[in-house]
Length: 230
Image (tube, rainbow, N blue to C red; front, side, top):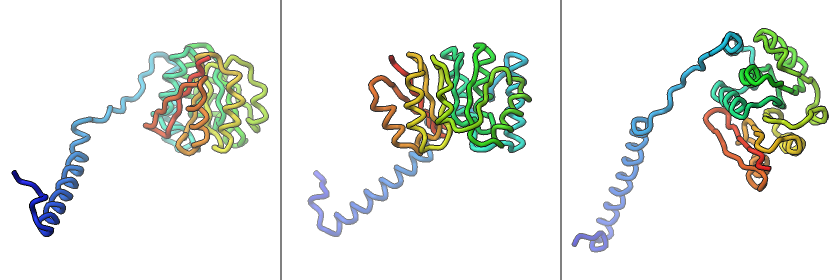
């Protein structure tokens, strides 16, 4: 029987070096093979089914190509917003952090079908003006109530029940927004928050509350999806 224990110190060192090199080679090999063993899902563009969807998607494409954006969601996250809102048949959506309206346009793809309304809050007057122009260009102004000002104060104007809420504003305000939104959410409603890897206290709040269930979608900017269970 062969055993490294029967070898002297010098041979044991050789075996240790060999084992280390083998481990490195295995690690590198698996890293190279990983994309072949688990290929990435293709990035298929959305397909419009109606003239209004075509207009919204064309506006999104124009805005992104022209660079008229500031702190907006990437397309992968935006499509997730659309899918989730349409899946729960959202008619009352609240967004904190309009920015230039890109995330709002994704929501409008769902609202155009459900006949609902987006209530979106933006602190910066310049971004709010740009968002309004994008909503008008996309033909969805009738689906959007944009409130310019401090959302911490203005959220009191929101009437429940809320089907979907999306938080994408200053990170130090996430907990206050969550606490204000929770009483407004319907059972089964969704609270979505963007860039959650930057807000550990928010993650703790939505994962330790027994009335909530949270999963994380980290492909884009990091999105938490929280359902209000009761």
